[in-house]
Length: 479
Ligand SMILES: NC(=O)C1=CN([C@@H]2O[C@H](COP(=O)(O)OP(=O)(O)OC[C@H]3O[C@@H](n4cnc5c(N)ncnc54)[C@H](OP(=O)(O)O)[C@@H]3O)[C@@H](O)[C@H]2O)[C@@H](O)CC1
Ligand SMILES: [K+]
Image 1 (cartoon, rainbow, N blue to C red):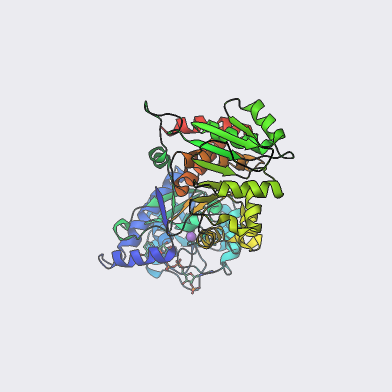
Image 2: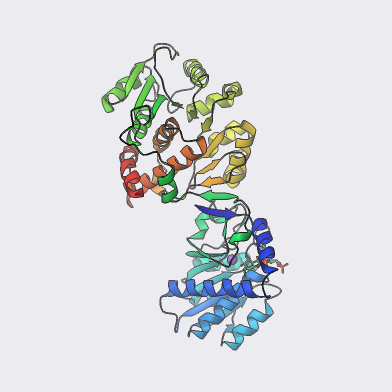
């Protein structure tokens, strides 16, 4: 599990650790780790042109001391002093090692830029001249290494309020920061490497966490000789309508590919015909009226993809949500519950799977605000609605009250295509039916779905059916 923390959490832990160590120890540990990562990225240090952007705080100090180490290995190191102050001891050490002070134009000829403008001490949008420098770095020719956090990214939230450095590599000190995992900050982070400065024992419960493949392997129920269809999970899918048949086909496909013991599909004539044609494995009930009589036992429901938002859909949603098993509420069903909040009043677990626009409608907040503060709004919705929230996006978040928000780090930009959410709903529905909590089912499904998307795309466009087809390969690749 990759865990991450807010700036305040890191600062408190650092103070506790610092109190036990001689002054300057942590910065030397940070600088040593940073210099080693820079050297690794450069390949050849001797003769390379390294430009340090030094702000007025300790983030600049880290950069200057790393520059000392690189200068000693033969790099030509220049420091651009951007702040009204500078870490004096760091600057003196750099000069002693042969480093020089330069103007901002040094960025344009750098092989490597070390962004030490601001770290966890920053507040608000980057001020001048930092903002202009950040833009220059992003346009420049050099590799960019961010110290602790790309400057301009809020370490605690991932918000980017103005200009921000785009790093190829972010070397973060002591522990990962939340803003490096959550968009838009995650998109500025590049590769992420952690320098151990001995903070571990002083850290509190994390603010956010990201599952690794090993975590997903541990959480996924694997079949054994004893497994029957109920152990493998019987999932009900209420999806599709006369107008939207594809969503039903994709959700059922996602569920079957994720290893459901059985998929019970319920829908009207047109989607039923389509699901039957694509998936003979599904057990189908054709509905003439919005009733679940005679559908048989299920262990969880997926409700909503392509369901429509008319009276029929509303009544069917009411029946599904009146059951005593976990329900995943997606797509059209999110519109229904945003109109009729009483639908969500139930004692069994609910996992909602909105994108930013759907969450905005559900919580009556403008969409732009949700987009700009995804973490905050996912958390708030989970608390206010009393459900688990899987907020889709470039980085999918799974929020549940009093738990670290799970951030998904698998995926491919090619996944941003119509219908992929239907597959995700099917996969998560199976995991719920297999007995995983909403929190684990949502985060494991997001992980597998992202992995499958990456495998299916392989650097080229994909169609949604490919994502479902790649789910078994994604599961196989975990072991
Ligand atoms: N603590 C530790 O044990 C360790 C800490 N370590 C390192 O220290 C870093 C934290 O250092 P820090 O606390 O000195 O803050 P930091 O991020 O360098 O900058 C703060 C200064 O920036 C300015 N400023 C603020 N906002 C701004 C804005 N929007 N736009 C422009 N300027 C802005 C403001 O300065 P002012 O403008 O007031 O002169 C403020 O004082 C941490 O990220 C890690 O790299 C490691 O060495 C490991 C051990
Ligand atoms: K930085």
